[in-house]
Length: 559
Image (cartoon, rainbow, N blue to C red; front, side, top):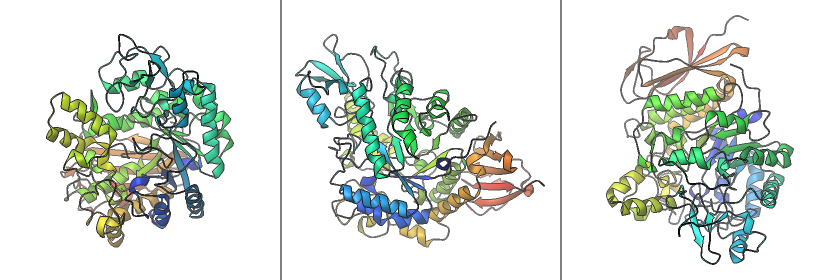
């Protein structure tokens, strides 16, 4: 296998901030830009390189800011443009970079473009969106929304339907329109000229639609996304145009959210000579437990399924392209609650194991706020405590199909997006130091024990372990550029692999017990390896404690 060429953005670690839930400074219960500013010392202490800032644009917040009504402004809840510019300057002063969400598959229905488009079929903005005639007294086709229900809504004034792959208040933009594409290019330049360091591009794989708008011939929602919505006929043309017109003129990160892609398609987005993106998020491992109806129809999966998925994707980038690695974010349950054991007994060691997994894979890692202190899913006692549009839409659908409130709430606490959006717990004060007001959403469980201040004070804390892993990744560039070589095991609970950087004659060995039971260690002569880090006391090299993880380095061969 070839070794990827060196690029600065491959050597970074990204930290995702969900602005509403990071730090409030006004007492309104909503995190803000000045709150992020007040925590830059913490992010420097942690050792991350890039802050991914979730949407802070003006928005009616039907989907928590992913429904944008002004692409060149700042929502008053978060502060002012002056606050943003000050934050950006201080991020750079601290030696970090900042990337923003670019949400251009859809806008808000309260954006001036859509308001004009609805006002008149003759509006020059009408074609900025996707309109179709209905058929048989219904929508143009059987497409369904990511947020449940038809992906079309009737505009009664014109008698036409507009497409929204997400919420009704998130009409999809029509990238077939050249003027719309120029508007998006202008938006990107606006922020890049302010000095930001790039974009995380929301559901960018969905921007090109098949123009026949035929019915989807699949029942499984993941199949619909993969085979109908994603990777449309002009998506790569659109991405190259955006790159050539804007991105190539800046030293920046272009990170795409790649819903519905496979490894072969991913390389088309990120190949070094393609002129599209630097890296992409893939979702196969995030969909392992999605049933036919999506996240609220969960199915079982195994550790082997997760391992096989990660290995398949690494192999896909063996010769070209690059991915960003993540195990949770604002759209998916907490990693230790989903893939591990978040019980009081194992939460700490489990969180440390997943930091090893995340930071020893090949790709640019992305840490979601709170993972570094072992935050687990927040459990809601009633649906009234939930805030997510998607949860409420699916609740109405599943309720109509006969599901009880209690059963749906159990699924929502397992899979829903609200579980991972609770405010960041900073200390043991009221509301964990997040706000002096009422938090916009329920605080997480056990914030008296799970908070930053407590972890800073403990020598063996999850936070301190994350700091150690971040230092290790910077010191051992084999974790960035080395090939990933799987060492298959008969024991399905073990994930064992090497990172091999042939040009530097360096090999690192990663040994993970991804279970809550003690396991026999792999048949490896550990005396030939030097231990770099472990997440618990190694009682004997011959056995692995529950959720034990180790990273070794082989002694260098003589030059």
